[in-house]
Length: 212
Ligand code: SF4
Ligand code: SF4
Image (cartoon, rainbow, N blue to C red; front, side, top):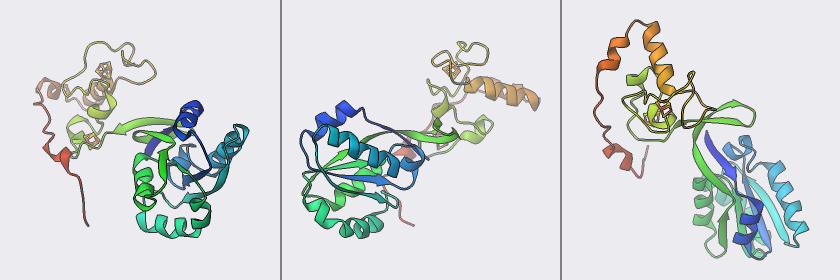
């Protein structure tokens, strides 16, 4: 899932500057992240009202990154959109760009910051799992990804800083190299740690488009 964080309200106000505003949410990731579901969109309308910023309407796209669905749903809200001076989108960066591809004559403001591709640990608790490097090599590391889960992206770890299995950079996360070590130990394959991994090839990460 794409993990997003809603921008601070004061930052949003400085981006909006003046209304009226039409608000857009997303039925998928942003809803699960509580950054752009119906509840958050309606709550944002209330908060803007308290700041005397008028809203002309709202819609939850299904999902915001789906161009054809967006065209269909936004068409149904054309009258409300036409009255707005700003479009505020609570989706990921992709969803916000899909909207700005359709609505080109009104400023489109991203209401969320897009953080990473992650796992839902429990409600409102998300952990980074992938930075979409384009060449998955997690099989080399016991099925976990040190590129996205070690703050130093070490391919030859551990760095030596972990304490009680926790990362020295962020004590709230497990040291992923500690996990790799334990998995290899369990399999009796600690020897594999002696192999020095060459720097990763990043050439595949430049892929910009995919057609199926
Ligand atoms: S190796 Fe690359 S594609 Fe695979 S999980 Fe890590 S960042 Fe994602
Ligand atoms: S403590 Fe572990 S996870 Fe943290 S930076 Fe070092 S090797 Fe990476």
